[in-house]
Length: 124
Image (cartoon, rainbow, N blue to C red; front, side, top):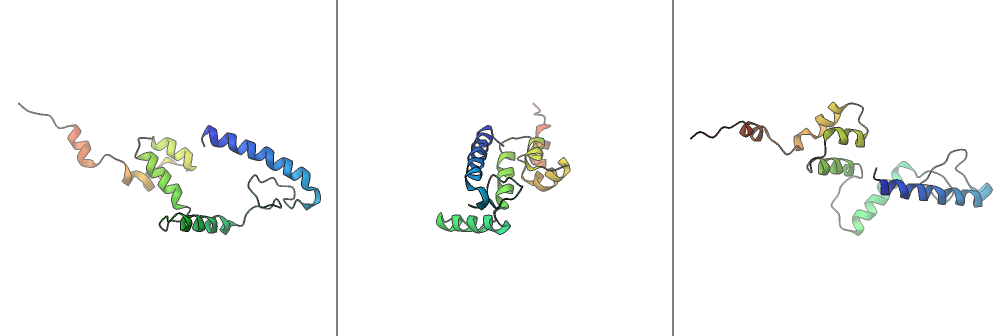
């Protein structure tokens, strides 16, 4: 997570706590604290993000792509820009780097031919 996103989440958390204090018995989040909730403090239904994503896609004419696919798109994009697979593993939360490499190694920029060409020696 970027520092900027971390700061935004901290600010949102403070704002949400103020809202909770002002809601008293109307707050339905019970003993849990969720930063991103509906207006009563309840966490969103699991399908609500997908529904919102679908509406966003339609509004901005983005091709059909699941919300989860954004995770793969992000990982592929940064991998192709030279970010270490170890960093991507940590970012995605994979326990083992083998998982990351098994899923994303096919998009690594260097091919077998590129590797062989590295050892090619020019002869005079």
